[in-house]
Image (cartoon, rainbow, N blue to C red; front, side, top):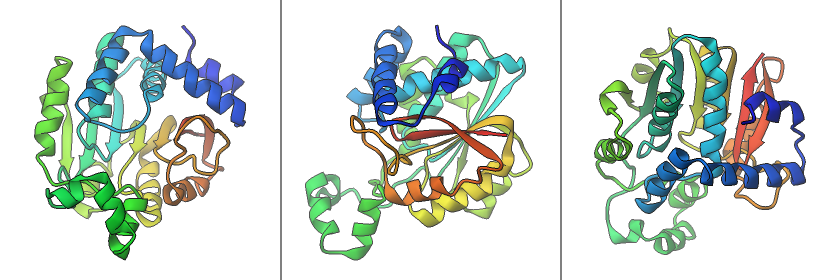
Length: 266
């Protein structure tokens, strides 16, 4: 099987290659039983967003990090219902690699559980009328209030994983208390998928990238708005703008799959 480095070495940020890789990675997931089963469950339960292709991307990244021959440290900003945290744990189990997984999230929604917000089309209508809802709608920041910890538990149980092995940090990513729990640590992988406004996405990059080990990977969600490609959802303009401002003296954008952009710390 190809390695992450194989794809990085051949990568060019063109429309054809971005489209072809997105399709190829989707096929890789469908032909890898444990990745397919996990993604099928997520889609059936509406327990996560993103593309099927991302499952193979995470496999390649963790496979690469497994060569460190020590416990790999991973952090996700913005957990939702546990798709990525559980996938990391599942991949680590398959690769028999030691891993420490942490996640920061408010573990709660920001809109009441009433029909007008549950229904996408009603939310869309409200976004045309009310400026604050328009901003949240455009930034993908509308989440209905519910028991997210329970959803995360179910996601882990579906793959026979133990949620107790995961460090869940309750809070917003820019909360001083949440940040203080990780600011003296170093990570090998950081996935930034929190608030998608430009301000917070920019803050997350500035606050958390100093925690990344040299050679480690930072993946930015919904950040390919300005990138070439036509077969996939390219993300959101606000957080894509923040991604465009990543310090290229410290990071290299080594690969893009769909709306996920992968940076490696130099």
